[in-house]
Image (tube, rainbow, N blue to C red; front, side):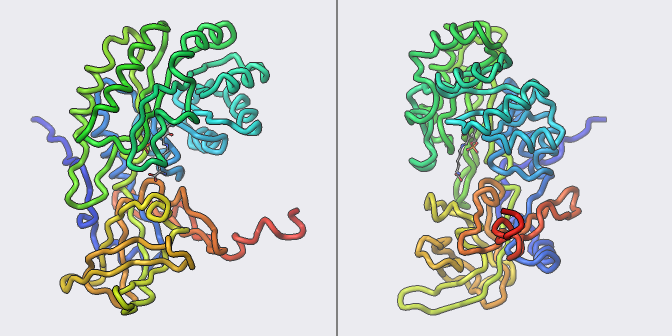
Length: 412
Ligand code: LLP
């Protein structure tokens, strides 16, 4: 008997979530509330593993560091790519084996580097250095372990200029200086890999920047030789708008294979963040105001730029759905509670909202909670995870006392 593979659609749209289930969660945990479906995270990982079979997947934890997410992906076999000592600690605490953990150091503060070296000595993680200075600072700390060099390949991409990193002078060692740096570093360290990250938002329409980056990195890997892995970063895009097609990973994988050429014994590594978690999450928020303004109907909600910062920072679009009613579509401006005009989720066609309605904001699993702040002394929301239909609280809602906790006299 053949076992049929479980359905694994390339994208989960906001319309696919059960309004009733989300309504129950809002009743139980209050709003604003992040909901993240771990089963969908697994599906996304598995699809990537199938469609990109020759790549070793490291999850870029910065997209969502919630412990159950790290545990789920580690359980699937993913490595974890960390951006700070705090993320490294989270990966180790989640039980991820050190050899599956990487730390990508970008202008690392001394405290991060000290802690990373400590963790590396105990757990044999890989530290990725993006500047000659970082390599020197590691040597000063008597580090002699696994080292990867982040390369600035001179080509970048991204959904917004603020997330295109590949050609940005801030990131990586200029490609022409890498062979010499690697030769020198081999005297003190175990140089295991090369790394580059083009930026966030690879789209299927134009793979040329991706191809170019991969080709340059493939050539460089052959030039320096003797590596365990070549890491071509993350940035695999997801459709934020309903009409947008999902990324065709099979084509990306094919383009990658063609461009990279023969890596002999080195493994190709990718570092997706958003692709694995974005469509696994929604943000629930309640309507508190419906106001007919001069040129628009403004729908005021409890979530704002302190809850989900992407629209305010990048002008990002997130779909919104009124879970409390259907039909009677109306164009409205959905805005948060912060006194800044950037605090808006933009214009949306919604079933005419009324005070008390529950809205769901889609694709909120990546860079949602992670970028939340306490601006305006607003406590950060709660996060709930779903696994096989069961819900559990992953991060409780902050209270006003949490917001002022660090200022208390006896704790200074
Ligand atoms: N690897 C490295 C070294 C990175 O810096 C990043 C993201 C990734 C992997 C994962 O990129 P992803 O696959 O998630 O696109 N806050 C922005 C995204 C910033 C990403 C920064 N680096 C946003 O909300 O769009």
